[in-house]
Image 1: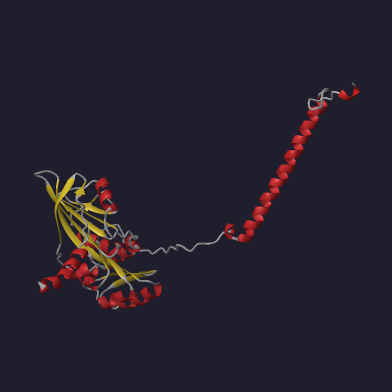
Image 2: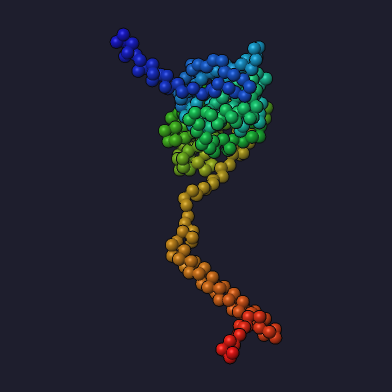
Length: 325
């Protein structure tokens, strides 16, 4: 009995850690079972900051069921990386969201820090919207800007991969050592394959916090045997052999960094100055006084003109002269 009491807090802690993701109802489908999911490729999932994974079975009718799997990651960048990694090679873009694709039997989408996969069912936009509203611990931070610098021309469909650490780099492009990439400096990378000149060219674009760091990393990238590298702003793009030099240059020429500045600090205006507020109040009072004087004079002048234009003064006092009697 004492042993059971010691284990009880651990059981309660485990139960609290599993908060649950999938609702009891998803559109017209009813949840019939749910369980935590043990993932394969745990090192890469850990690098993406996997916090919770859950799989549920839903029932549309007595003969129609489907499986839904959810992964909650540390942020939207990790969800982007997991989406690229888990997306089937033959998937097509859908209208469910910016990061959404489907095959004949599977639908996959990433939203915020969540990756959602439906097997045997194609959810509607309204169902996804209602589901997203109820997701626990949803983080809707913007997606990383690096993904927008990947060229689209001759891109092999679904070949993109987003790298946040050495495990992903080794899995997706093992020709670049993690020490050269220098993830400890805050770098991230996007890797993709391009078809150029009838050959496949694998491109890796690394993003660094500052252009100076990128300049230093460019020197190290160029030391890799046969590497063709280019720096633009804080980005370093590199293509490793056996790519043809001309094909590599055509791909690299499409990468151009365009910096943008966003200013989030509030800038006080004149209306925030108490002195300007007082001066404006006196100006308003003066305007009202002038308006009142002009309006009074106009009204008085109008009454005078009316009185002079009539023989009998309508406002004259009637005197009875009772004292004369």
